[in-house]
Amino acid sequence: MRTYGRTQDVLTGKKTWVTVTTDPNGFQDMVMLTTLAQCLKLNLGESPFWADWGIPAYTSIVTQIHPDLYMALMQQRFAPYFMTLMLQKMDDVTDEAGRPAPYYAITIITNYGSTLETVVPI
Image 1: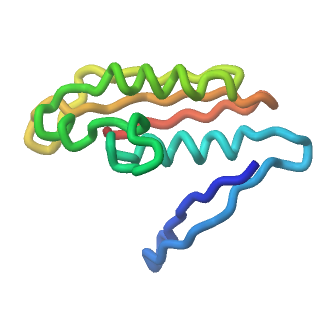
Image 2: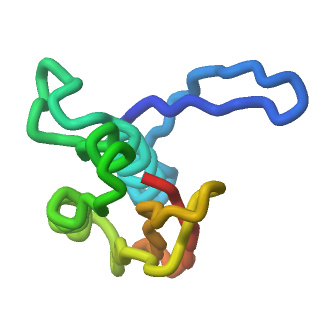
Image 3: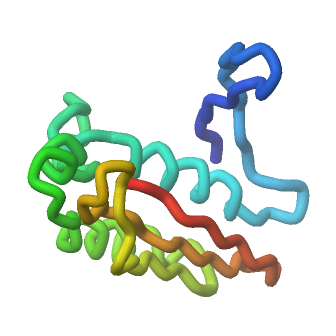
């Protein structure tokens, strides 16, 4: 299995596409992690092939309402590919103007036992 992800050089800002494939042991965790990241960046209805994938990010930013339903759908779609996948809404997070902002904590335990944790703005 393979997918593509884009990385950015911290010093130059240059963006490059990289191919992510199944590892030599047959685990597809990094492929699915990259796909999850791409889906979280995808706006709902943006893809002509997968219109029901993604989250309504623009609406969430304008209304400052968390896209809980769509995050739950993402969790259901990707949970079978990991030992543990948790997408949790973070309360009491504000933007620069002091308004509530939609942030989520993502915790993943891969099939080979590594724990990955991050906080992402939606």
